[in-house]
Structure formats: C-alpha cells, structure tokens
Length: 255
Length: 255
Image (cartoon, rainbow over all chains, first blue to last red):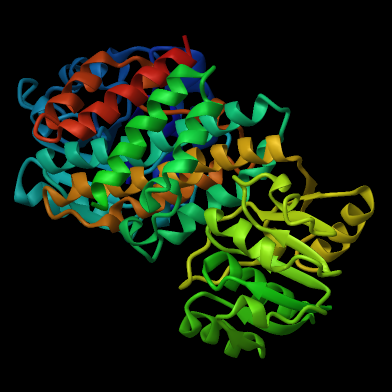
C-alpha cells in the first residue's frame, strides 16, 4: 500500500508511523510548513513537500490529518484522484468530500489523544470508520485493520457525539488534573502525590462503569466537606465555580 | 504489631488487608453494623464487634477509618489507651484527638480511591502522615512504611488541600467519564470506545504535567467546534453548562 499523508501534526505522525510499521510505503508527506513535513518524511522514508499541486496522484491511500477547517481545501486539490481519500477528524462530516467530487472517500477517526513526545500502541486504539459507498467501506475496513483490530463503523452523526464525549472524558479530565495541581501549588505540594490516584481512577473504569464507582463528598452529599472545600477555594473563584457546577451535577445524577 | 480496626468500609478494608499482608495481627474489627465488621474480621482473622465498650485496649495500633463525622465519638471511646491511634481522613484535622486527650495520635491518610471490588497495590499509594508529637511521628512513619514506601509528612492544612485536589483529579474526573457515557447513550454507542482514551489520558500525566499535554477545541480556541458541541448539547442543559464552564477555564489557563 502506497500512502500520501497530508498533515504532520500529532494524529498524522502517530497514524503514519503505525501504517509504516504495518509495512506500508510512504510516497509523500505534505505540510504547509515544509520543515514539519520533513520531520515526518524522514521518519517514514517519504518525500516532503509543501505544495499541493506536487502531490503524487497515484497513491492507494491519502490520509488528510490537518486542522478541521483546512480539510475542504485539501480535498479540492485531490480532485480526480482514484485512490482512497480519508480524513481523520471526529468533528467533521463525511459530506465534506462531496463538493470536490472525490471518487473514493471516507473517514478514519482514531479515538485517542496523541502527543508528539509519547509513543502509542495503535493496536489498542478504536478506529471509527465511515465511507462514501458500501464498496469503499469494505476497502477502508481492510486498510484500517492493518493498524488496529478495534474497528467500529460509525456514521457522521454518531462520530460527532463520540468526539464530544471524548472532550468530556479526555480534554476536560486533563484540565481537572491541572486544576488539582494548581491547588497543590498553593502549598508547594508535588503533583507526584496525585499521579497514582489519577491512574487508578482511569484503571477502575476499564472494567467498571463510572456510575458504579463514583466516590467523594458530592455523591455522599457530605454537606460539611462540600462547605469546607468551598471555603478553601474562596481565593480561587473560578475553581469554586467549577467545584459547584460539578458537585451539583454529581448530586443530581445520584438523586 | 497488634491492630484494632474501627470501620469496615473501602479504606478500612484495603488498609487492613495491606497491614495483614505485611504480617500484622488483627485483634478486632469494629463497625456499627456487626455484619460489616464480620466480613472484614473473617478476611483478617480478627474478632468482630459492634460495641465500642468491648474494644481491646492493649493493641499497638488503632485505625479509625469511618465517616468523618463519626471520628470524634470513636476517639472519645478510646480515651486512656496507650497504643497509637490514627484516623485516615484527608479532610479532618489532627486536632480532633485533643478533646479526648488521646496520648499517642496521628493521621495516616492514603491518597487513593478505593472500591470494594478492586484490589489495589498499597505499595504504590502515597501515605500522608502527621502526628501529635515528634516522637509519635517517628513511630507512625515506621508503621506506615510497613505498607508503602511512599511516605509524605503533610500537616493538616496541606492535607486538606490535597483532599480538595483529589476531588478535582479523581471524583470530578470520574463524573466526567460518566457524562461522556451519557452522551454516547444517546446513540447506543458503547463505553468501550472511550476506555482506551481515558487510560491514555491518565497515563500521559504520569510523566508529563497536564498543563503541557492539554488537547481539544478549547485550548486551540477552535470556535467552530465549540459552537457545534454546544448545539449537540442543546437538549442536555446541564452538560452544556459544564461544557461552557470548563472550556472557559481552559481558555483562561492558556491565554
């Protein structure tokens, strides 16, 4: 399988490396910043370019892994190509390919958070796929299986829900970790103290459902502790607001 | 070391089992509900009781692991005892032992979330200790080392901050997992889809700081996605409120 990767950010990098490990051949890496394309090109043995008009038009797979609002423009530039063209965005409809009259198109959305500095095991990442036709869906499924056995057929509406759920379960969660650290910094306490707790909280829901393992003062409706915590936050009004909002939501969930 | 454990909930159970594994002898398990005491008594080879007046007064260590508002009454009942008496509460001052004129007292606060159904490796749990005197502090440190090498000397004020930080990093986080699931349920999508993401989010901050690995639309100030997400939440006003509150806080953090 010969691949062109459009984009060189976290998703592009980790997905390209996964396909590379699975034996794919990379023809080109495109990025609007040539230096960024070059980094991933070196890692995948491809040629770097920053010119859409120079894209090789005979690859088997084109992975568009760029910012959501840049996908349309790239799809336009790939007009007339016979190969399979996919974007990797959770929040973007599959219909984005229609105006460019792309022949074989789909979505390959990896439900994971990627950072450049940390390797990920792609075989444990759920891949949500959707394609323009039933025939393309079969092809896309085969392609996706090369990097993960966890394939889910998810349409655009559901993928958008998934992306939203991921914001709650990942982005907001990471911010709460940060706020925990901000509280500790008031007293020069190390973030190391929280790390085992954070890991256990995530490990617990790998088998249980979060509803069944909720702990803390709000679920117990422990009014005294809730009040004392708000006193501790009186000089951190934003954290107090978040504390109230989430405690209210927990209490309502278990009413 | 001969131990009496007062309480039979999650903290009491996991801590008692850790001391048992470290070779301690359990004399008694007390609970106000005899049936609960009996379960832990069987696991630790101790005698169960629901009567505070029957507590053996010659143990080396008394672990009070009960609801915060029940600690005072138990401390009163232990008046005059020579052994070391500790509570395990993050939110409760060490001064709670003063009215009862307890001789050797302290706090042994394990910074972890416990559930009955899941075993935990106590050797990876940070133990926050505080004692009434420097002499007791040395003794308590030795006692704590029997179950974990991660000993932190933390005074009452800092322990309360830690407890508050843990609410953000654990209790609120778990609730966000639940809200993620609630979003998926709108479309019968499986919570399995979110599990790898949840684990990776927690694993990432085991070495990195959460500030450095924040992802998602709010940190990018991706207004289009933020708006679309709020549209998806228009029939879930509470989730919309949480979405707005946390996105605002993320944006402010990275301004």
